[in-house]
Length: 243
Image 1 (tube, helix red, strand yellow):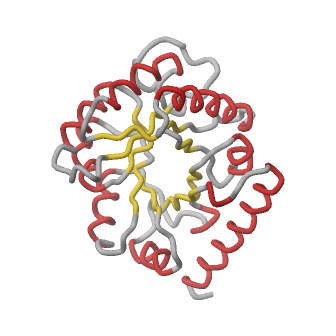
Image 2: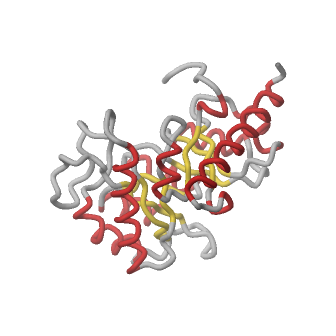
């Protein structure tokens, strides 16, 4: 099957499925944004997706993001960085991305804010706080991600990090992000994230984004209240190679 038609069919199937889950969950599918995760796939696929109406694409490696964004310049895409980010790669992401889903520590906020100062004032770098959804995570402070977990700050540190992001003129706090722990009940994990999202919104009314759910658990994410779904294999298929 020709690749564009393959992608068109998978996008159609995904949209139908999302509509069905939304109908069962009393949600409006227009309130959901699908971020197509294009990591390891070539820029040619991104161009095909753009032709099919896709606007939001996600990458999890800084250099791959920058390279593909340059190759796809002029397509009016919104680039989402969704991977764990080292502070020494913050400048690359701040230049190439429109949104960073994985802000999880104060040092990263500082690095992103410094690197984003040259962005147009009307286009600050959108930021989501990645929160650890592991129930055994130390509910302490802003200590960064624990390598034994899926990444993210402990919930107790979210308020301080939100305040720090909101204070940066070059950044814009958009909400929260979470990854369901391996082997856990994804719906319960995402429900905890929704509770934290509501808490953040009570202080920052514009920070309404909740990024949760991937190809394998998007139904649970929708039911829990996600606004942004990070979907890769359901649209693009199994990755051609791993890096």
